[in-house]
Image 1: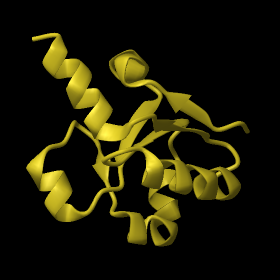
Image 2 (image 1 turned 180 degrees about the vertical axis):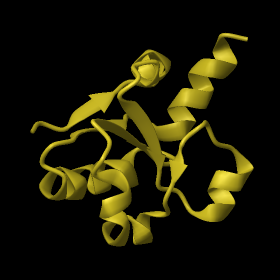
Image 3 (image 1 turned 180 degrees about the horizontal axis):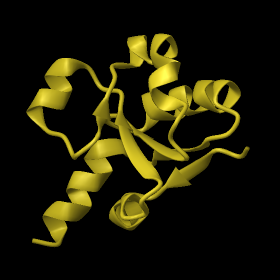
Length: 103
């Protein structure tokens, strides 16, 4: 399947779909500082926890800037053939910047 980038301004709409989950791969200290409702699995643990993810139909991966998420998206795309894999383009930084502008 093709890996898709989700733009920050489209994340909320994507997550409203019942079959979509957000996978936050940031380190614990990053996640504790700021996070959205998500499954938290630090990047180094993702490969060993594939079983926890294979039941999901659509996974959107996020990190701070999008770079780690894009790398994990490629790995998950190879290992979870029945799952649609996306990543948050620009990461939480882009999402928070858009959210701050709307307030």
